[in-house]
Length: 615
Image (cartoon, rainbow, N blue to C red; front, side):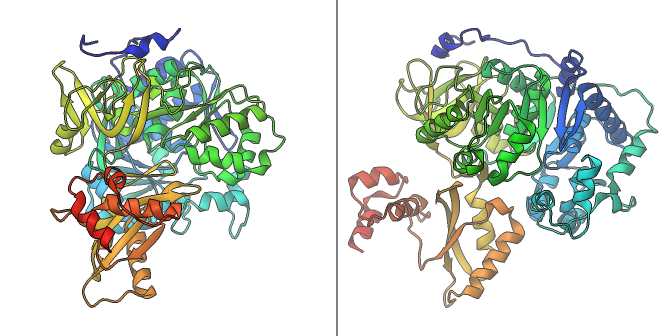
């Protein structure tokens, strides 16, 4: 640790190690090594189909051989467009075993988004869930993809559940739940013809049986293992390059810092594998310590009680909206949750009020634990700061992980501010990404070498650190909306809306929502002589729904004659945010000096607000 780094939080570690020894090998190798200690433990559970670590390693080897059989080479990119299914995690580790790079794509991404991810990563090999086939077919010719392997959500289900899922005209709850993932028509992967670019999962596995050569593990800690997609500091999607060291350090740090995870613990893997939180915490960390990942490709918060009753997980990892929904679910009444020993919240801010409410709820249901909040971002492999065991401070996101160091600096500088002063959160340590794929400019802005010789990740988030090293998240300096744990980028939505022939310009902001916490709202200015109408609004919505993932769709649209502007002509989106806040509170918009501070846009100044006062 550099002498210039203050780390007052270390005194709160207790039995936790301050420093860990990280291996210089692949993510797969870490799992192979630790699995040897508990081969008969269950690795995962998928609708009752449970596999031991011994069986899991055999499945990874099968897929690794299949990859080699179709021609995947060291450092090739394999895109995995999958929800939480066994094939998704097996493909991730199999790619890693042969030294390929796994690019993790959200399967509900729009076709143009998928095309962007495939092209920016230079993907030649694609593993895709069956319900994405229709939209991927439309863009495949515009990519480098040589082979697409399609997988059914039902592939690894037990026979009875699979038969229910695949039965025609079924109306069972499970089929409804799983097919709700699907914006397209359901396609059974077993019917995919194994010719041209497409290959069914079963035929893919068969090809691997003929590959008998030894698989050399050439991966080292510094090598890129995965690409995940994040907004970066400017709030536009970037491919985040994560190394084997990043992933392994994250797994080891999570286990050490959470401090209550045990061999054979069952962990509910709700957070998706294409999300840093899901891949790092719910999968890689669990597989590292010998736990069991309960894989759910989709879940309904309203029926969440049935999931807990069926699986009795020891660890629940989720976003605040999930925990709010649990407190409102009357089906939990009289349920005993004494098996729940750890609850982790991430992906969005956990309010003090919700923490108190959920802690009371856990106690009422006989759980011995309380909810603990973590903070992180994809650029540092998800969580890197977490509430220590038995030491919560209201409003705090906790203290940094072992070997992770936090500073609060004046925005745009590397100058550390005094304790208790707000500034930008910056992070250094072994989980910090190697950079953004094919984007040197953004990488340079985000990863900066400070005078202490370390590379610091500038998060774009505002925070405060107290004298004991506890960190408090205050807000996002970058334009990004967090809705139900998903990152939504206003620039993306605006670009799509602005491409409509009748639209002159648009601005998207986040507005409060009673369940999702925040959702997107679009303000639209039409071209001269164009009149607003329901038909035009529907046309704009259709354009958005074609080009953006469902969770990115604006919850509300509003036509405006003009949008507020700064003195240099930029859209003053913070003014719109303030207007919505006032509207939400039922108050009339009356700017004053206090509001000037709240608005905070660099050129919003008195001129703009004075004009609004007069109006």
